[in-house]
Image (cartoon, rainbow, N blue to C red; front, side, top):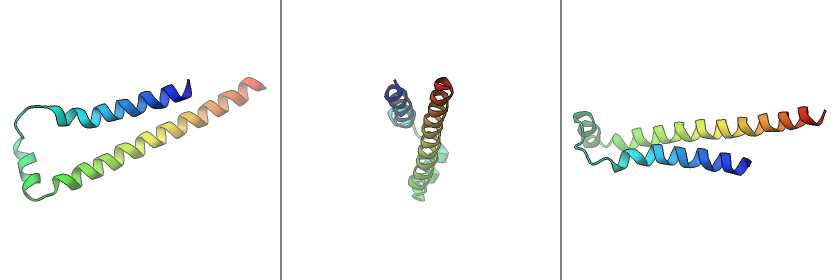
Length: 75
């Protein structure tokens, strides 16, 4: 059950990240400006780190809450 939640969260994050890559539209002007100065990679890297940090935090909080719920149910 716990593995299912973690897997669902993982695939949700992956679909959010890679979903943007699959759009077949022209790049907006801001994307062209960022890409010209090679800052696009830095922006994507920072966003990826932030999203991974938030995801890790939520997973660990879920694990802690589950442990506390188990302790409460045993008492």
